[in-house]
Image (cartoon, rainbow, N blue to C red):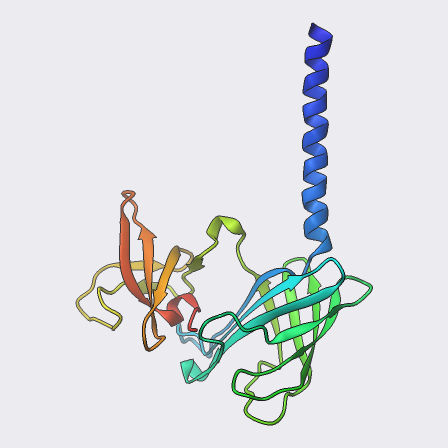
Length: 223
């Protein structure tokens, strides 16, 4: 009985190792898949000047597709699909598995753009080699994006400014005293009609759930 007991534990250990290897292999085989984020600040400003959110899916046959959301000029230029569903990036992974060439179009209407992608660890480089034409395109032209947090924070966004106030309505109120700080996570519920605020949920220190509105720039999530 003792021998069987040990073998069972050995089998479980082997199964665990194989499972871990298969999970790691899956991630290794799809280095482009996931959400990638870039945030640009100008000078000492806490408000992002530009944000670039890139979401990609890599298939087993090497095809890659996805979409981006680019906000620049302090939110005055928003190159996104409001529904977050349109695919504006398609291409193929190179044989090395670490680079790709993709075609893309701008949601402003410019078409026929080409970009090169390269990934190392949790960094993705986006470099435009051919600007889309026929209408407006504001970039970005070359940026390095960081991999977004794993599934633990799916549906949530991290605060990117030192102090972000939470409002009762989708507008700035000077009377509010509730805020979150840089590094905190908030769960996105819905965006305001003018796309400038997100209704979010936040877990307070005493375990209670707070539901308020936050400036989209504070979480780098202006649609």
